[in-house]
Each structure stands twice: as structure tokens, then as C-alpha cells.
Image (cartoon, rainbow, N blue to C red; front, side):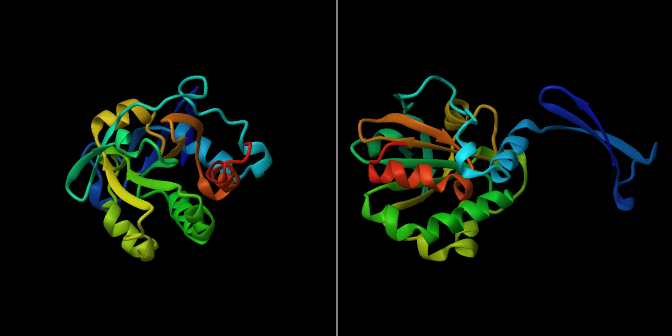
Amino acid sequence: MLATISMPTTIRLHHQIPANNLPASGLSSIQTIKILPWLLTLLILWTPPSMAGFLDLSPQPLPYAAPDAPFISQGKTHSLAEYKGQKVMLWLFSTWCHTCIAGVKALQEKQAIWNKTGLVVLAIRNYNNGGYAGPSISTFMKKIAPQLLHHQSWVNGEATKIMQQEMNQKRFPDIYYLIDKAGFVQVVSTAPTATMNKILKFAQGTPR
């Protein structure tokens, strides 16, 4: 596979198409993939936790008031405003994302810690799953962490287009927001497996 890099966010991949999908006119195609979100997520996973914090994913200076973005859970529309007065981790991710599987498992392992603090985790699948096929959030959770499906502090949902526009315009496969009781975003990061310390410190109310 040959790669031609067009900075800063696009890679053009020249690749062979499976035989049953070959076009009549040729043996290869050029597919353009927006790669920056992938690179940032992988970079965090390959970076020591002490350095992961240097990646700035926040769309504006912190802290700032969280937008009242809607999402769908159990067939009903909800908004972030409903959780004002509680510490919230809003995690937007795609169910085809392998690092997100690791993130769910990592949060499950630390459940006893963050659950005591009253932290509410909103596990929200990206709008249209980030543009790629993958299981629904409920199917994903049943397979990866079924015990969290009915946990009182864990909410599964699907992002609306409005939530994507306000919280994940760059379509990162994995991005989370830590929102305080007053409704202000205090932390924006990714890859819970590598940045768990941030999440637990926020939940416990200790300095970042």
C-alpha cells in the first residue's frame, strides 16, 4: 500500500480492491480518509499518561459552559441540562473503535472508584457511528461490558446531529468531556485507558 500524505489532516491511500469489488476500468482506487482524529487517539495510547495531557482537544479555553446538546437514550431525547448538579463524563465514541473497547473495559475495572464519587458516565455513540458501520451502543455494551448496561451511573445513548456539531465537529472516534456540577466543562480528552488518572481525579474532586 502506497501512501501520499497531504498535510495536515488528509492521507490518500492507493490500495488494491478485493477482486469481487474491482471496477471494470482498473485494479486500484484512491480513497481519501480524514486521518487526524485517528492519529491523535493512537498518539495518546502510545504516550505515557504524564505526557498525554499535552494534547489539547478543547474547542475553546477551559473551563466553559457545556452546550445543552441532545442525545437519544432508550428511545427518548435527553439533554445535558438534565444532569446539571451532577459530575458528568460525556464520552462520545464509535463502536468500531478498538481503543474504545479498551476504554470501556478500563472504566469497568475502575467502577468501584468512580461510582462512589457520584460520577455519571454518558456513553454516547457518535452520530452515524462516525460514518462507518458498527453495532448499536446497546449491542456493543452487551458484548463488551454487560454489567454496565443497567448500572445507575452509566447511561448509554446515541448522539444526535446537533450533539455532533456542538461536541465533536472533527469526528474524533473517541473524545470525552468532564463536566462539573455547575455545568462547566473542566477537561476535554480522549482514550480513557491512557488518561484514567484525569477521570478519577475529576470524579474525586482532586486537582488535575
